[in-house]
Image (cartoon, rainbow, N blue to C red; front, side, top):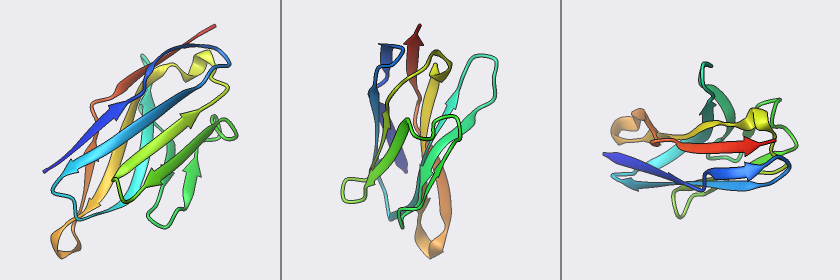
Length: 120
């Protein structure tokens, strides 16, 4: 079993920065993609950013130029640096890892979510 633990959420004023981290533990073979999603009240969960094992990034247009995703394969962690935060970035942020197991099976794991609140 794999567990993901997120940290770094909180309250910040508009224009400020936060850094989210997500660390995996447990029976980890290798990790393919790492990603961050967010869900605001009354809205569907949406992709914020993802990064493959080869370093290819996918960024939501709404955060392009403000957020940066990175990963540390040795530590099985993913980070999301969020700069120039806006009130519309307020949401619960979830990390997700696609873990490659035996016989090349792939399973998606999710963190518990961390609240990010941006005040105007």
